[in-house]
Image (cartoon, rainbow over all chains, first blue to last red; front, side, top):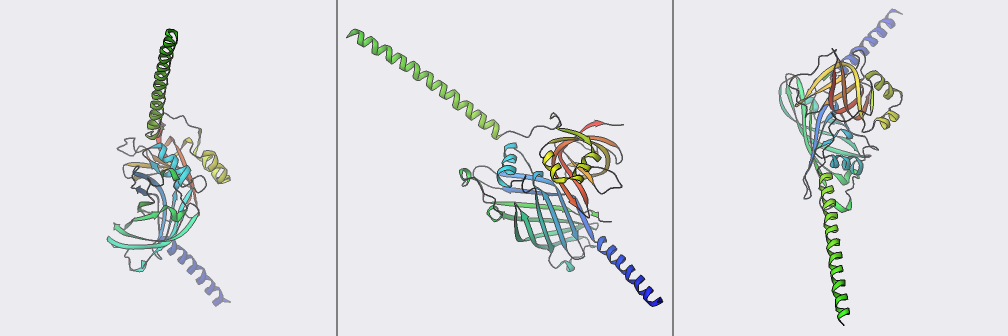
Length: 188
Length: 163
């Protein structure tokens, strides 16, 4: 009876330790930044959103990012209204989500300060469409805090975001996106 | 013959008066349309400072509404200006502005208020644990098993000082 009890106790302790270690690797932010820029003959369009939620599991390289679409702020109110109502339909699709992982994560020294190239691969869910994407970026580690930078282009048609025919030739069909995530908080 | 001539002249005068009136009206109308289009195109978001809040409530009541029925609450507050009273749980910094989290330190849930970057605030405006009233535009709601539930407000302004 005694060995069985010891084994069960060992198993329980292992579970606790595994759970603790897994959680200790998770870093997050609730105020990541994202901006997009679209160059077009009619007018350049630029917007910022500072309310990104992101979690990175440094142990396995899993990344999850959530963007509230209504959080994008434009210089002009009319642009913001058009963006929410006619383009991304933020009432219907309030959030964009990226779920993926950092490639060759095991080679990234998260405890060592420096700048490292990184590639993230995963699914982006936007405007009700799910699409596989690969994003090139870099990870800057300063005093043990990783900052994730990424820049990439998205084609609106890939996510069924239609441009009204009246301005179809005057608005760019793709947008340039910049992401900055400072993962300075640890999940307890 | 003379009568006919004077009739024609009178008719031409009337025409030219009518045409002139029509052209002036048209110019005024086109100008008004252009002016409206131009101001509408360049319209900025209305300042939250002068915007009356659609709803005024405590941070705990606000969070409770979302925890009870997040879809209903999201519809209710969509694009509305909300004034929230609560205790500062955390203060974060993002570029040139601050993020104030309202809520209980015992709970993972909070109201995340992103202060308007147009408000020049050189120092953290409040200390953790102090009581504040903040007005901002409702952006959305995040629910996460690990990170807790967060209601996000942006373009926030501090309304009152509670000592």
